[in-house]
Amino acid sequence: MNLETIFKKKPYKIGIALSGGGIKGLCHVGVLKALEEHGIRPDIISGVSAGSVVGALYADGYSPDEIAALFEDISFRQMTKPRIPSSGFFKMDIFQHFLTKRLRAKTFEELSIPLRIVATNLDNGQSVTFSTGRLVDPIIASCSVPVLFSPKMIDGVNYVDGGVLKNFPVSTIRVDCEKVIGVNASPLVAAEYKLSVLSIASRSYHFMFKANILHDIELCDLLIEPVDMGNYDTFDVDKGREIFELGYLTTKQLLTNKLDTKSVESKIN
Image (tube, rainbow, N blue to C red):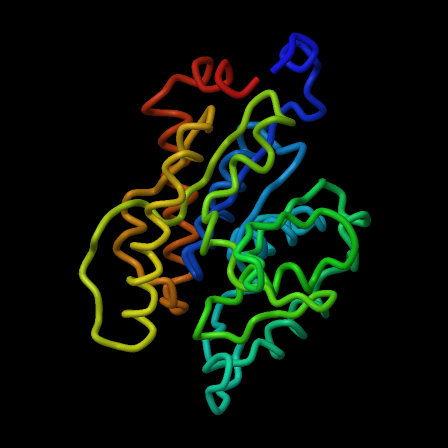
């Protein structure tokens, strides 16, 4: 790294990276609400899987409370459609329609906050970051958990869940930001689980994701990681409001109790 790179002014002051985690991604929404109440708003967002959904809606101008309301009383089966297994057990057509209908921006360029979405190129085994062009397709690609959902084809390439190779996309914005807040909705705990297909799949992917987030955790200036999130499954869709509140309260406590406000502000300002 040369001196010009070291001393070059970063294009963004504060970036926020939102991890994957299925319905646990609603904790991101609570975090964003708490940050807003302390006058902290990101200049750029990076998201993977559930984090890409929350990031897109927030960058599109939805408030945290509006995002939480969108996903209240929505079940997994309302957002997916079973299929005879070929490339996945469920189709995401309903969820794609849901996002297309609600996102006002149709391209990355139309968003009010720059957004980067991470997906996995299944054909070449590479982590890919989308930041231009059509918006909904990369979100669906980033959310397409292998086996459960069919890969999403974009420009002739098959993509699956970005969390397969990068479940905590801090590195995608680190070099461009003065400070990065990382929100990890999938803390490294091994909680109890149910012997159901979805729960077993969720737990298996959770263990896989452990290996690819450690480096990104170290890149955060401020890490927000609700430990109690380990008590929820990726597909606990009926617990959305609880998860939202957990993200909100954890962040409020971090900003007001565990660290004095000046100390926190010095980390991210």
